[in-house]
Image (cartoon, rainbow, N blue to C red; front, top):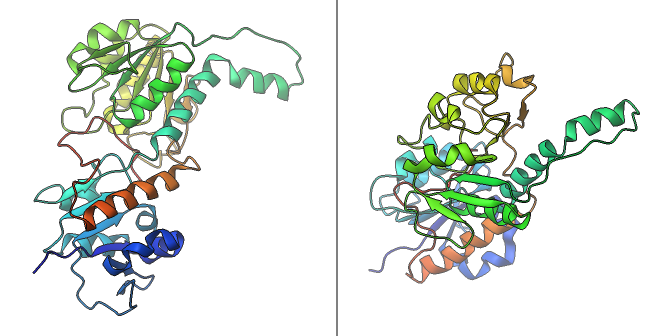
Length: 334
């Protein structure tokens, strides 16, 4: 008997994508709003679904049935494939799938929007955006100089899809890029490639430091007092990866010393950020509520990544973007 190619998806995804999923109807199991699973081609209820694959994307994330969906996939004895809408799989939702012979594939649809966010945030700080807005509110007609990106030095820690998109944009403005990757090698988007053991030598020269690295046991608390004290005075620090990469007490101390001079935080250790956190009002912190991933074209890119892998799966072809043991790039946790 040939192996099953049944793939579990949310009925909402099926309704949203319509004709794009039509060629795969014979293989699709749909979890409806009541938690009942049915076949896409016949509408017949499946009493004990045993999917061979599952799509854990945005339709499943923001849904009261998230736990039921994950349980249905994890408990299937024949599960061979899980496709994630994220690039990183460090959150608890993926724990049941990280061990065993399950191929986990990922999407990088959020990367361009996150990179846009990084460049926009750095530009806003370097061009004194808050001061401009304050002068306008005060009806004060007064100009001021601003800092240019050209010839600045950017240190991008984690050079997966997100880090590469940040580099692509920063290089377009004339920045020099030093990329940090587990296996350095070379990359056309970077002027220099180093391993993480080279951070202490690279930090003193970096005008901008961007965290795009995955969270794991080796990187948890990476940005500590030693890391911060090695930074260039006045440098700009950006975290669009995971809050737990940063020792937040050390960051506050570092800001007081001007290393970094400014922090752009889209992620923090505890989300939502507690009301008494000093980050809310710190004059050297730009804070956003974990929104860098919400580019308006991200979902369409992620849909295409799933559809391409779905086609490979039903044809028993090698899947694209299979997660490595410790991926370099991290997507915001949802």
